Image (cartoon, rainbow, N blue to C red):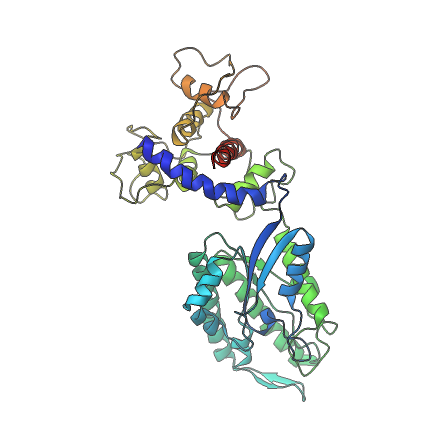
Length: 426
């Protein structure tokens, strides 16, 4: 099993090496980003005169280029007039799958044409009407399609960052009750689009939150439902509000921010909620097992039930725990104690075994790690490589709970070191 782990880690760390280049604050080489703008005429960049021009995707590309990246923008998958169902159908085409499989960044604009196709619209007269039952059914189906689109993209390319956009209100020239009716319907549509996309793993981009519904400056043509260049710039601005936002609201400025964000972007750790990592909260034994399971490629066989009385086959982390027991990372016992905090001594053991860490030349001496203590060999091997350190009073804190930030920082150090060793050997 140890030989298998070692071979598997080589291929996984190779991928980490490539990805960590873009995450490292010391990287100097230009980063290439393959960017796919997927969806309808808004994704394609049709302007307020009905002509193809510079859309929000073009302004996103320009800003990323200005930040030092080399962006390869593909707008060929954005088709004016497409409904969410047509976007979804295109995902089965080989050329679409190939483009998405290579993408680091995907933006999606879809859903507005679903509603436009069921509306009675006379812009010259300033009149728009809906059958409310049909509109509600269409919204429901559209949301289902959006969720499946995002889920399919994530299946094709789990590493791609996917952003779902809402729409600038296209009818600011309406008046009175018609304006209120259509604005209300637009609010429902935009909310459904963002919620459906987010539920499947896309990051929501709300230009409506930025510009509101008084959008005449961005929709100057009463006879056209597309924004002008300023409108598309606002969409790009809304995108970067999401793109540049802290990954978790509670890690900005934290001592382990870089490590937490790097691992989270690689989907190797999760937040406690969608917006909070809880860096100073203790990591549980089950959480540690889940994160290690993601990091270490495993055989595809179904593992034997390790027989823990408190981890049944219906436990959310059963597979991770069972596979790591099979690999010798965790030991068999009567109970696993999945919700108990992972101690620092336990952390040293599972990381030393999981990553097959070899001893360095010098290790720290901790006042609470006596000779013969069961975890001393694991603590020594990690400290000899500089992966762990103790407290100012000379203790390692063998029985102290490992915080989520400590876990992320130590694992990140190990991965960077492994990546550097692999790079030196290539």
